[in-house]
Image 1 (cartoon, each protein chain N blue to C red):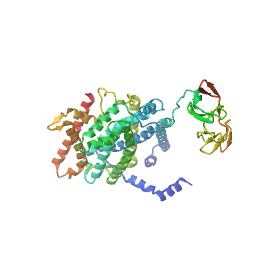
Image 2 (tube, one colour; image 1 turned 180 degrees about the vertical axis):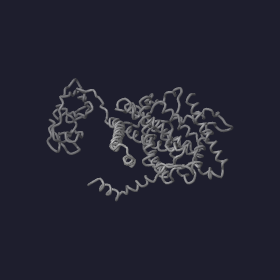
Image 3 (cartoon, chains in turn red, cyan; image 1 turned 90 degrees about the vertical axis):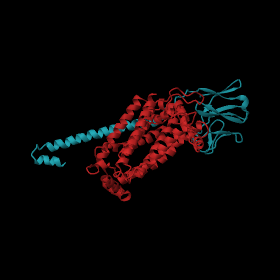
Image 4 (cartoon, one colour; image 1 turned 120 degrees about the horizontal axis):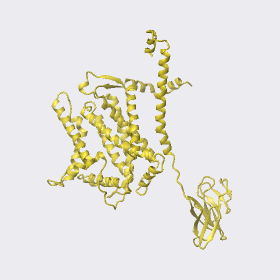
Amino acid sequence: MTVDTLKSWLDERLSISSLGYAAQKKEVPLHRQSIWYYFGGMTLFLFVVQVVTGILLLLYYRPSSENAFESVQFIMTEVKFGWLIRSIHSWSANLMILTLFIHMFSVYFMRAYDRPREVTWVSGVVLLLLCICFGFSGYLLPWNEVSFFATKVGTEIAGVVPVVGKTMLRFLRGGDEVTGATLTRFFGFHVAVLPAMATVFITVHVLLVQLHGMHVPARYQQTHRRMKFFPNFFLRDLIGWLVAIGVLAALAAIFPWELGVKADPFVPAPAGIKPEWYFLFMFQTLKYIPAKILMFDGEVIGIMVFMLAAAVLFVIPFINRSPEQHPRRRLIFNVLGGIALLFMAVMTVIGYFA
Amino acid sequence: MSNITAGNTTGTRPDRTVELTSRRRFLDYLLGTSALATLAAIVYPIIRFMAPPHVVEAIQNSVVAAKLSELPPNSAKIFKFGSKPGLLIRTASGELKAFSAVCTHLECIVQYRPDTKQIWCACHNGQYNLNGENIGGPPPRPLAEYPVNKRGDDVVVNRA
């Protein structure tokens, strides 16, 4: 059988050529802000890196308080290229959060969430929250000192939420304290629940992007040129991914991810303990809030404000509609976004160097 | 390709077509080999990672398998010999015998049956006599026998 007959055999049954037509039709607008189009694909690529390295780590990782730390130690010291795979998993996780934030803010400032892309935005916000949960649950898995206390503090914060807090805390910890039961749960969330949810939302998100095509900012609507997605833009994506692999390998080789000391529930928290950088701005803000605001606990107020901010994130496309008619509203949203970005950046830097 | 033929008609050197195709072929070759090298650099660590590392174990040449006092005649005990199980039998006549407890058929762990006075594998009804010889069922070879010594109350099993 020649290649052509095999091709037509498959095509008759699977209609592969229709995919080819779709790929041929897909185009990417070219304008001065086209650079931002790369960050969604980059985030997806880093997610794939996470899936591959995560599955590899599962070959040796053992999710129990007795074995977790030792199994990660085994990966780092005994398994061939274990240090590389684990360091890439950790670094890629962090870079993914970074590209995700860049992607989100670029979409925000270019108003790419405008009608009819509201649902795309909402699915993206869900993916942001899922990724944060991925980060939080994965952080505990090596069962070392810093991850133990980070989880203690993080779940404690969930417990502060009025009404549902106590239940949520017990659900997250699998009991009243952070123990081996918490580790088992977080492992389950990290490798089963969250990946399943992420798969669904990534599928929806990416399909919606194909359905509506790439958004073009209003300013470039008339004048823009276009580039074929396949192969032209795709090859550029590929170069970006190649660079990402290079950066990950370099980071893993030069700064291998540390393992630290095994967690011990009866040892005081080490000095200078900090959460991952993407939680730092919240961590630092909570430090500045006074213990009491009027009759409420300062902590509760702070956490409620952050939850409100997350809720606002979801409804942005619905409160900021019809841009052309409202230049002032457009300005307000840009200023608010700028303030939020500045606040997060400043708090992160202070938190990092404090 | 069109610019190549155009090149010919506008009167450039006739060997220019050859030169361009060979240059293109050279670039394709470079691109292909770099793609392959990149792929290899990704796949090689992954394959090495998946191969389980050898866990070096200290070779144990003898082990105290049991106390004589805990082993009445016509009974047996599974003991740990390095990473593998062994079977220590005290026969009805009081004789001590030790074998590898790993069935030679499909590596199940065998047991001593006081009723038939045989070694029996529950997985596929394999039978061995008290010399470790395979006498019934699927096992293809006898069980490896280990020398046994008494040291006071301790029963010491040695590697053959």
